[in-house]
Length: 463
Image (cartoon, rainbow, N blue to C red; front, top):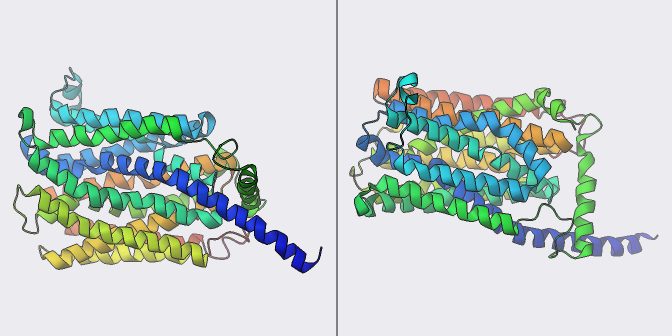
């Protein structure tokens, strides 16, 4: 075939593929975006609830910090099994199960101090309300385990690596949207519904923000397809184009790429990337759970929860823009390693700035914006690295393992800040530690993705 004839054939094929992926994005993104907004509201609304809850139940910062973080212990223990089950039973049913169960657990926090636990609190040496807080946070982590890595794995069924980072970034902007929209909403619920029907505002907060998760679970059960093979909204040519693109993408890991679950768990690169992810989640959840408190301490009136919510929109709105830009720029240039490392350098700078801002409003909001922007830009670009060399069951296990180990930072970050605040009255020491961990994560990223380490994956996008 002559070159002009070949080019004429390639152009329609590319147009069909572009159209197929555009249709898939339009169909899937609203569902996945809605899921993640609901998930993130339920995961972090405890940070706003704390503004009333801790005082009303006489809990210290240490109790709150440990309880906020224990979520991730349950998440860690059940992450890999959950993702392997998702691969076996299908994304639609498993993601729906996750959402419905965690919505029910999240709603139970409204009566956390009224649930009869029998002798259990005494066995652990804590009062019943604190025991209930710890146990429900743990169960929330168990219920949600597998959701995020399941989302990442699900996107590998639809989008090849060259297109996936932008799609992940678009999905993950739900973190920013959940915080931008959820912060003033949470503040308004705390302030506006406090005392309605004899309930404190924090009780209404848990009930009202749990409902979307259950609703989205039912929507997913009905509307989310397990994969592109039989969906009616793609033409046969479009389904063939997606299948061909995914098949062409599959060999990028090379002959030595892990395929089995145990291959992934024995991979040094997987463990190194888990450490990198840990370095980001320490800051992501440390700052996220404590941001309402930190902002309130900038001089906001103790009961002006709406203002706290409105000010919280500034860091998360900035972070949303940074996240979309990072994902788009990384996909356009094909560069991954420096995008990931630079994001962690921004987190380092923001944490260091927090150690010197005190209660100054503008510098503190700038520092929080740097941290939030860095961690969300990191999440938008990071997952292109492990998905470039993990295949088949190794992808399900490896993605889940990186996410589960990495998300232990969600336990230690909030807990560390709470303990240091209780002991010293401020979190300067915690901010310094989180800055050092972000710097370590950037260094490990550059090391594990150096050309010598990726020589067996010549078409990998982790340049």
